[in-house]
Length: 208
Ligand SMILES: Cc1cc2nc3c(=O)[nH]c(=O)nc-3n(C[C@H](O)[C@H](O)[C@H](O)COP(=O)(O)O)c2cc1C
View 1: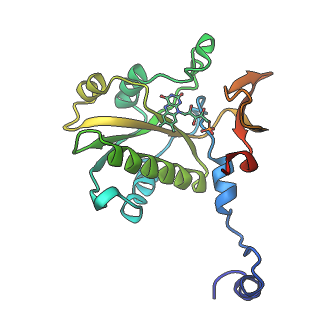
View 2: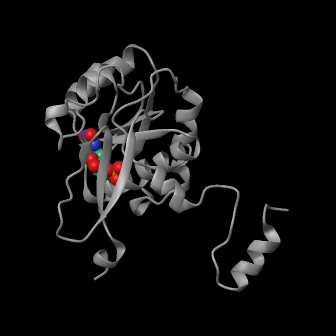
């Protein structure tokens, strides 16, 4: 029988949230912060990247097109090549992120069999967010990266398809905090005393 089955059945009947020993979706989403500095003493294995990619056959896709393809990169020359192409923290150019020695060393490079179109980009968002939630479940973190030259990275890695997104994966070396703000306040992320702050508009203000 599943953990907390009876308690959860009672809670369900009472319309209350169920309880579990596993982190809730909210907890996973909270921990799923964009990390731009990694602990390089931890080496991500291909099986972890594969577990992340394995969420893809479970998610929605526009007209069920399933045009995304995934290339795994672990520590080594390919990771160095990816690091030469990607750009991080556009809102904090003075910091030149990532700091030396904290570069990510594992990636999932997302490619497409079709040219970019609105449906494909929505598929991409669903895919990378779900893969990152899986990473958090595995005790890892990551970063969605779209700021790179597609052609250059394709050539650099010798990929048969155009890369449209890079997902960095690793153990975080950063302290990141969410800050609740009202709509209209400054949304720019910032750093203070070694902490990375991410302003998020509160729920009441995003309901129209
Ligand atoms: C489509 C997309 C593309 C992004 N591209 C980059 C990127 O190229 N470089 C980067 O440092 N962050 C990138 N990010 C991360 C965002 O900057 C980050 O999500 C935002 O600052 C909020 O932080 P949070 O993810 O911790 O909530 C991207 C995020 C998304 C959703």
